[in-house]
Length: 201
Image (cartoon, rainbow, N blue to C red):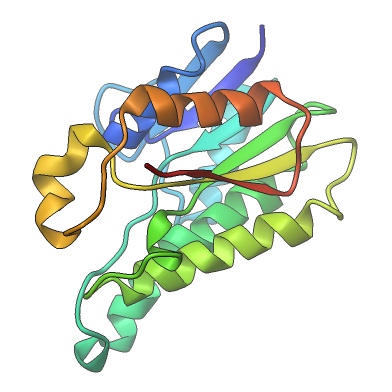
């Protein structure tokens, strides 16, 4: 049994990840709500405090990243930076800071999303940062110390979130949370590293 920090545990993607982590001790974290620890991934001190409070852990699974949605021609720099500082730098900092604390042979699992492969209107910032995270994991895997692994889950929209996102994604086929959970399980319990695990219909 591993000790896994699950960030964004109360969201739909966090709940999907949880379906694949059933045999582990899961420590929940998030920006608010009924979680074991509060963390803001856009704040380096908050990330550091989370790792120090938890102490020993074998894996970090992140399922959050705030993205602004707007037409490219109308997006302000501040909208871009909201997305960059959360979905991109927030996740990079989880790894950059966390590699000092995680157990030998531990793993990081980050989240991107299918929109960098199948673009839709209004989602340029989400697509761009998702592509950055996919590339980050592929490349940084070669530099991770102490046998630490890193992977990214790149899912399409969840069936459980179709009522929220379906109108934005005509022609997409949603997938069940349990299928996405299998990708998180493979990342945490397998031996792969530097991989982008696509979950699409």
